[in-house]
Amino acid sequence: MEFLDWLAIIIGAGLIFSGVRAVRRRMVKVPETYEGVRAVRIGWLWICMGTLFIIAIIFDISFLKFLFRLFLEAPN
Image (cartoon, rainbow, N blue to C red; front, side, top):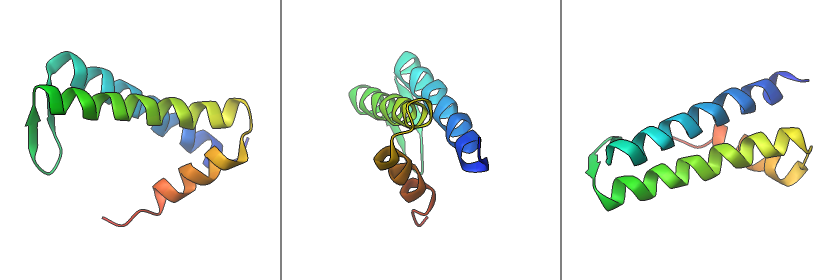
């Protein structure tokens, strides 16, 4: 496996963990603090993105790998 493959697995697992935590707590602190339904939606978004990154590596899907690389290059 390449470095980016391992990185996608680690970041994907981290996103899933953070998403589950946001859904359970119903609060998330990104540059702003969100609570309630908005925090749950952000949590589910993180869970979906993390799952997609891990699926991209397991099944070697080039489009999803491109999505991961695009995610890494996103500006702050």
